[in-house]
Image 1 (cartoon, rainbow, N blue to C red):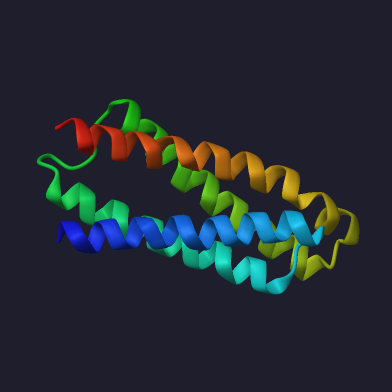
Image 2: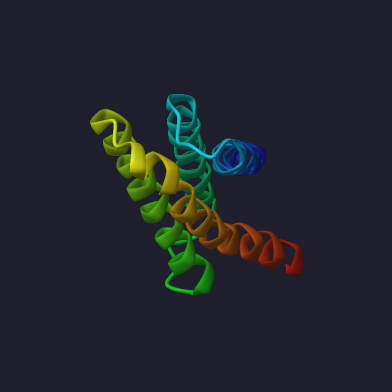
Length: 122
């Protein structure tokens, strides 16, 4: 199961990074970015769920657990907000959306990196 969790989390990194940085470079939120955000969230949630089943006791109230939960909630909010922006055809929000995207991506990296570091330290 561990390999499936690692693959899922890695795919989350790939999809979310592609979505966030392509949106930034293109200067406007587009429909395909939204799909990539949702796919990244699905892979992250899948990988996190598998990891929590592997870990004894599930969710841990520690640095990695708290930042991981925060990251998933932010990714969910991010994808929902992107959905609303695109449904409303809010041009101003489409052009400014990348600022929030990069912040969410940076916060998401914290549990990604801490999970990797904690796993290697064991």
